[in-house]
Amino acid sequence: MNALYTEPVFEEVWHGQLFALTVHLNDSGHFSWADWSEKFGASLLRHGVDHELNGGEDYFIAWLDALEGFLTELNITGQKDLFLIKEAWKTAYLITPHGAPVSLK
Image 1 (cartoon, helix red, strand yellow):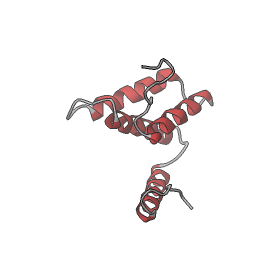
Image 2 (image 1 turned 135 degrees about the horizontal axis):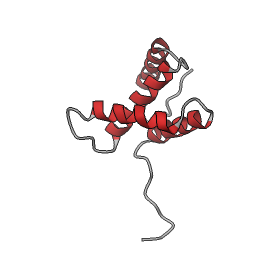
Image 3 (image 1 turned 135 degrees about the vertical axis):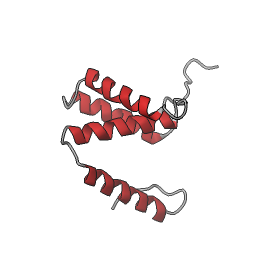
Image 4 (image 1 turned 30 degrees about the vertical axis):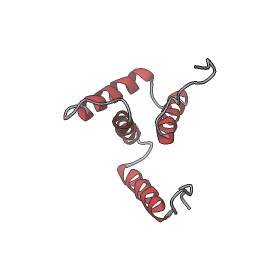
């Protein structure tokens, strides 16, 4: 194997974007890594109650849950805003032709 070739770090683009957003929020002083670790650890426990997490999609769903909880707890956004943006993305995804990039208008 070529030493310069590496496997992708994230399975999905949104996993990397979620990671980058979390790092940005920390770098911007919205929360400490200790606070993030506590919040994310609690989310992993909740999401891992029914089944063992595989470290892929389910891991990042737990990550998203923790970040959304943090954003509402810190009054950066509200549940209503999170709901509206998710619905907007869902609608955009459903009306976008297969293979075309999804975007909000």
